[in-house]
Image 1 (cartoon, rainbow, N blue to C red):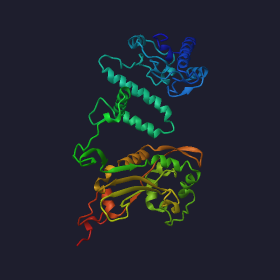
Image 2: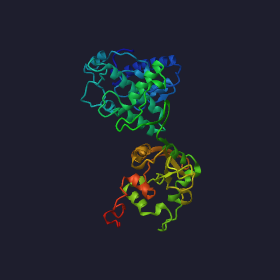
Image 3: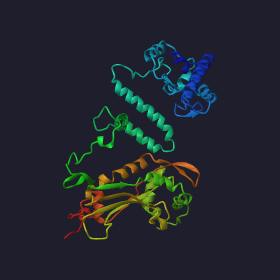
Length: 416
């Protein structure tokens, strides 16, 4: 399309460059008209990087003249090009053509001593074609999705991680994301229903049953234990979407009486220790410091042991003390329901909330604060846990039913 030679894209921006650029834009506009979207043109400049759209051909031309093309954009996959003679392009690029301007060359992040421009060899016969096509499609999909997740970078980051993480340890053919896409493609292409997907009836390692199956009726079955997880990140974001709640989140910093007396959790030495240890975290008062608490309950009001329900909740210590333990601000995050309590295996059920808390601490989430009218990157730290002694043993893994059951006293525990 429009000739094999693409050296003009990264050469001197002279009359020849402008002529070829106009040809490129004309073709792009024609291509977009065929798809009914000529008013939104994908911009391949070095800044937009094929991830943003411009409203007209003139704006596209201005971007490319001022900023140049994104590096190594030799196959115009976002502008209507489907097939391309990569071997011909490789030969043309390796004929010794150089940039006429060193500054322009370095602007694209290339080494001035590297005369040839690297070309992807995904079409090499020595590679597995199916794997290459699949990998290319995932890369293109991730580029396309990034535009839709500008306001939710943590979700996009999860997709990025899943696109790189093997489906299982040692798997080289599929990632977690590509495996799901492969199954979904097969499902859509062949009209599969959910019945085509088999479900394990027991744990592959411990052979424990997964379902309660009534005698003589294998079709009717219910899980032995069920976990409900109410995602915490969207609810954290909503705190700052409400003006009053957003102001409450700053109360500990702006309105608390700081006379050295212990009136609020923020007056505690632990709060100050966190601020000193992690100054970047402590420097933003809107960063969250939740407490985790859990215990088992009997929802039926009897002493029967036929059913157990465990609740895992978060309490936000940024709030004023008269709101901290109000039901409106206590976040129920996990509810574990089953015939027996989780015991020391509670860590298995805590995995979803632990994953979100790690994401909040390591990366944070982009949040719009309606009180200040601006965005900020909000991390969170698990400030502490509060629970009774048996629940403490389950959460920490500490053995309580011994002669050294006190985790504080340790070897000095007094027992009879």
